[in-house]
Length: 268
Image (tube, rainbow, N blue to C red):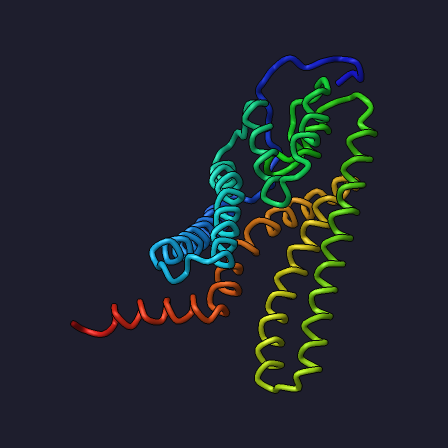
C-alpha cells in the first residue's frame, strides 16, 4: 500500500503458519493434546492447593499465580491458533487483536504493558495483515507506516533491562545456593539442590531463548517461520513443564499428589 494511505477497516488478517493439507490435522491434534495437557496439569495444581489447607502458604500461592498465568497466556493463544490451522481464512478485529496482544505480553511481564500497547494504538494503520501466528505488540505496530522508532527503542530497552535483571537475579540465586551447599558439605543437600536447579535451569533457558528469538527475529523479516515457532514455544513449553518441575519436585505437593493417587488406587 502507499506509504501515507490509512486503513480504516477494523478487520485484520492473521498470517499464521503455511501448512500443507497433509499436516493440518496432525498439527491440530498435537496442539490440542498440548493444550489439554497444560489445562489438566495447571488446573490440577490449582485445585490441589486450594483444597488442601496445609498448602495455604505464600510459596504455594506463588505456584497458583504461575498456573493462572500459564492458563491465561495459552488460552489467549492456542484455541485461536488451532482454529486458524483449520480455517481457510484467518480474520480478527483490531480490538480483539489489541486485547490478545496485551494478554500475550502480560504472560511474560505485566509491568510495562499499558505504556507499550499505548505507544502502539496511537499509530495509524496502512496495512491489515498480522505478520505472526497471533497478535503481539510488534505485529501491531508493523501495521503502521509511521515512524515506529519510539516503539522499537522502548521495546529493546525494556527487553535488555528485563533479560539483564533476570539473568543477574538467577545467577545470584544459584551462586548463593552453591555457596550454602559448599559451606554445609551435605551430600543430600547437594543432590537436592542439583536436581532442583538443573530442571529449573533447563526450563528457564528454554523460555529465555524462545522469548529472545521472538523479540529479535521481529527485526529480521527473513525468518518468519522460525519467529512464529519460537513465539509458540515461549507459551506452551513452560506451561507444560512448570507443574512438573515446581509441583512434583516440591515435597509437600508431591506427597499430597501421592496420597490422592493411593486413595484412588487402593480399594475401600
